Image (tube, rainbow, N blue to C red; front, side, top):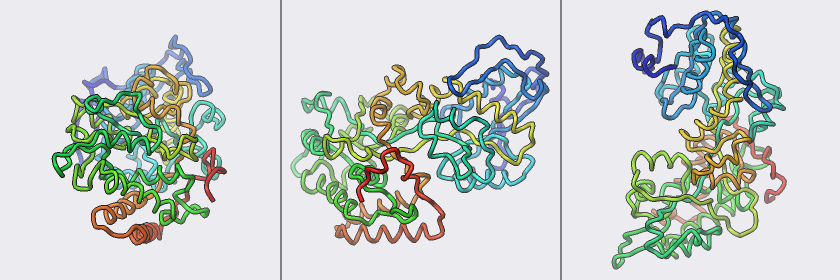
Length: 462
């Protein structure tokens, strides 16, 4: 889809920005009679032979809904490639603001003839949209041969309705200039938490009793970090039933006390210093923070002058832990099961096209600052040149996905962190209170943990 066409046709209706055709003949789908395109077959286990007619070569238009713009959604560029190969197919893009997307999409999918046949998926809304999704017409064996973590998306019928295009997790971002000022080099990159404390102390500065530079700032990051800390000690987010949260446990308390010690005992940060750790890091006031890959984009956009590096999150010892951290994936598009057979056939062809196409993975990795789910690209030098990707690569096998967990598993623990460090509440009471919040929020949830599908599940702590 060319940019000129999209810009010329930009319209806004009811919160939806529609990228639709403007009626120019050169932009309209045309009859395609050339089955043999003279193009090579792409892909490994999942292959795509472009030398065929889609929809018997007859003009057809389908819709794709997304909350992302071209700068953040790789499907835009895939549409351009696909339409060039198959000129009889037109894929129109409708952009719906995130806040509206998860209201309008489910309503639209319920048999609405104007609903999209293709749509962007976020796994946190899996339960809401899965009933309206058609399984991929690709053998499970081929999907698992080419892609990582496919098994976590296989449903009770043995079907797959989307997979992870790219994945991400947490890592430590560090300011290289502040490291150099402290006499530190890459040789000082810590691999254990004890080593990180030593480095953070060298990076912390005071003016009298006032902190002017934090060595390690965890303000705002506990909501995600607690999960990785517990996993490192072999403790799951959920109990054996897969439904009951496991936040109120001794390991959670140990780890919260450990983080508290970073501020109270080792004084490498403070609750009143850099409440927004990302802003503090971007302003060169904090030397290290824990964050996920999306922060790469934030730095590029808001703090382009920060000279930073990324290294893997430390563990509690040099031994390989149960898991280093949680991961989450960006999803491949869904197909609307309620649309016509002709529409769905085009959608299935498009899905096969992108999954066989390395360009999709490269673009997704780049714009989403995430690690490719496609196995053949996981040791690609160009991709690993990104420090965030290089930090993820050696640990891929030791990352665990608990499933599309309810947001309360982040927001409620963050309250415990604030109650302990900001309000002085005892750890036992704070953790117990947050557990109650989680259980209350999940009272009507049918969420089931995916932790049991983790490759090293048997190594968990009983």
